[in-house]
Image: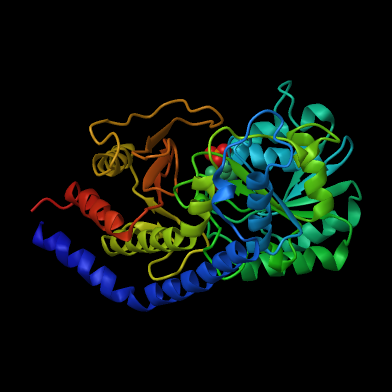
Length: 405
Ligand SMILES: *Cc1c(COP(=O)(O)O)cnc(C)c1O
């Protein structure tokens, strides 16, 4: 290895030692939570048997939902390969809860890119098409409370935990608790919902413990532990979960049906591994942030700060550098390392996007991956890593392109 690069990485790791210990301690706590849930529900080989047809009394499906509810300290949960992605899970929540004439209020700025069409699309079956209104506040408590007081049509308050494709810090649980307190000080009746993508297992609890009513996310991010092959989850208050289940399948049928001809084993095993894998991904984000900050790039999270999600964003400043970074990640991926990524028009996104996704599960971003919308100021988002060792190798490869001698 290039001696200069070796030294940069070594110094970065040394400076992150204390934070890595905090991450390990949290992973231990969350591993205990997960193990406790497995023991409470007596998970056994019988939960790995496939089902078919309607899937009545599918104990594998029902127990998996119970496990998630247990880990999230929620009243109920939906976990299903029939939910095709995180966007689908979030969309189900919105359509399950909101009715014509209701208003959705986003309070942490615009929701994730793929939700834009779900909320405001014209003629595509969006919430707007069904007469659901939308309002937005960007981290302004006063304005939020004013709207909540004045606009009684607000039925659901939406917050995004992760930075997504934005230049901001991910919400910490303390931020979420503060938001909930503010919301509840003016309105007891609104549903508080949190996009939990990339936030699972990052801290010692989940947003439900801060008073959030409903959370949703993707199984090919943190909580699937890299093993869940597809799917999404929703956890929260039973009354809302029932409404959402009616939307996922059909009203009155809800989660009584739904078979899976594959085995749920990977979903179970992935959940068991998730606290550890998330810890590796967190360390990876911190290493990228530290190293690129040291080289003079603006990074988020700030160097040495344990983030509230598993993403590291780096302002590289040019399309060329972004493309080179993403290609470096692809080169050191276990799958498709020979493939060269190019920017493309991805469904659900407004700008062209370039992605490195050399993953075992297609598109899984709990595995080491990087992506970037091709737009100013050319920020690359890197996330995931099954193992911290892989992240280190990737940092090295990215630096090779920047440091020549
Ligand atoms: C990934 C993600 C989603 C959902 O995206 P899918 O690709 O549909 O799974 C939503 N919000 C945030 C913040 C995300 O990171």
